Image 1 (tube, helix red, strand yellow):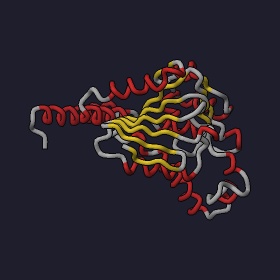
Image 2 (cartoon, helix red, strand yellow):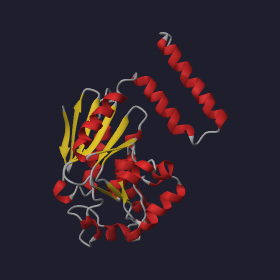
Image 3 (cartoon, rainbow, N blue to C red):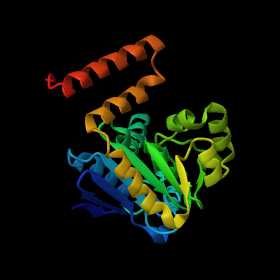
Image 4 (cartoon, rainbow, N blue to C red):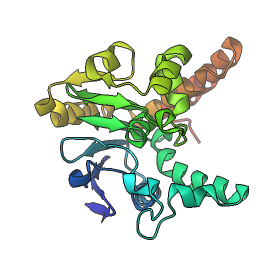
Amino acid sequence: MSLLDRDGVRVTVDGAVATVVLTDPARRNAQTPAMWRALVETGRRLPGDVRVVLLRAEGISFSAGLDRRAFGPEGIDGEASLPQLARLPDAELDAAIAGYQEAFTWWRRNDLVSVAAVQGHAIGAGFQLALACDLRICADDAQFAMRETSLGLVPDLGGTRPLVELVGYARALEICATGRAVHAAEAERIGLANLVVPAAELAGAAADLAAALLAAPRDAVIETKALLRGALGQSHAAQRAAERAAQARRLRDLAGLGE
């Protein structure tokens, strides 16, 4: 089933799996506010029986980051350029950035498991879009780089927290402050990538992972994901209490005693 096909985003649904594809390979899937709006709409329109979302991209690059036209005085047709954004009052500028961030927030909902399949370059906003997902499978030619700091900016699309959670503060700072490329082998070694495969095998590996994620009962995966996401912000005692409550719900459900 086709769910959406516009502004560089195509979404299809096959049973419990939704596939989101970035479809502007000529621009190396450079991101625009229109693309972000399409991604926000995708999250809102996903059918309730979708359990796994696969994110992939056409062409040689996953995403080369923000469309460079946004940096110029004219910007992208119909969109505010970065210089124009800078002139907005504080509240309007904050609201504009918050709107952009929405495209990166829904991927970690507890009712979904999202998987980014990354090939080639994942730069800036592309890196942050990969970080928005729960899991990342990479082709052996993948390169991640956070170039915002090198441009005098900061990563502002929700990527800072997952990056620190995955690789630790010191390494995250080094990656962001230097803007260097993190190649696939290093990404796997430091925990940024779950798996690295030959480029020709990327689509198959993502499909295999989706099938594996669907093997367990949905409610058990939802409860487990919620526990894991909340673990770092909890004391040991609070986390054990959360585990007990979740297990009680599962036991009662399996015994047919759920609400």
